[in-house]
Image 1 (spheres, rainbow, N blue to C red):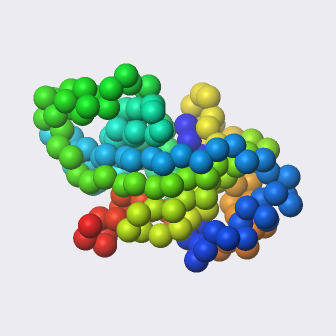
Image 2: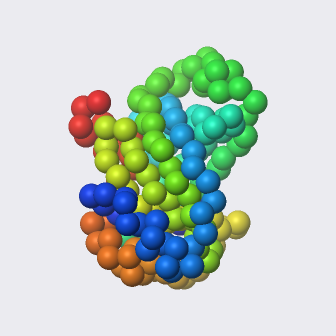
Length: 178
């Protein structure tokens, strides 16, 4: 399960300094291109699910994201598999009847703080965001993920980011008609 909260920010210039002062450590910067697909027999947008192929640096992943489990965050089941070749992964999905919905490209600067990854995202055509996420290994009881979610929300509050955004980057991009 992925516990995730994010906030829209007007600029990222001072965020790295703020994270450093909080004890965060810089991990890396990546460019990620996420291509989303729709299922041939059900509308994944309507069921609040997602299937994507992510190309991140020289690695490719096939990912399934389940429905969001609460109204405060983007917490959901996530199954991610490293694949050798994004084109072959795409070909398999297309042969199964999946169709491409859209692609989202972002530059992401990742920091580590306690049990969280704090990501500074510059999303093409969408804007800039700070995302706080953590992964839980097993299907947790609601009280466990809720405590982690609340801690992530508190971290955003400490950073003075209150414009929380529950929609995915794909949803935001599609709303803009891109």
